Image 1 (tube, rainbow, N blue to C red):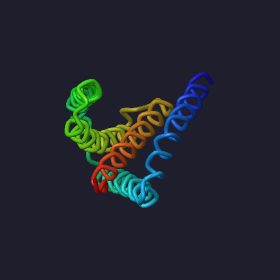
Image 2 (cartoon, helix red, strand yellow; image 1 turned 180 degrees about the horizontal axis):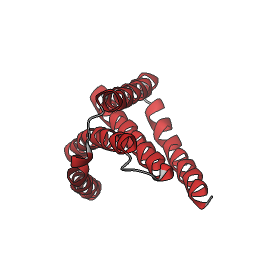
Image 3 (cartoon, rainbow, N blue to C red; image 1 turned 90 degrees about the vertical axis):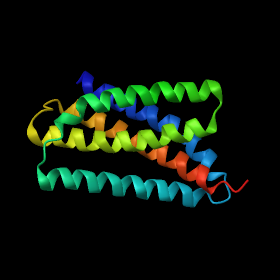
Length: 149
């Protein structure tokens, strides 16, 4: 019961933080298109990768260590990009997160299929956070590419 309460609190908080982000992109001249492209891209990536893991039944558990280190490096680089105010590093971090979250979707879906993840709450949170990060990273990249300054 506490796990479910935690999931609702986390998803509510993430939705709360996503609102201002979406508003800032929607204020751009082609903001609606950027948001829809990021949403469509996120959905397509998730469906393709989960479908691949489900149909091939391949075991992606070997990716765990790489993903853990990669996410840590990307997180530290993101913090560095904020403090050093380097837009190029920020875009590189978004690109890293897109690749890492795609890998995390494969890894977690594979764990669910092969019984490596028995805690459905953790599986749900992991996939939700991966989808959230994938969406926001795509949003950042698409927003930067559409900037005509």
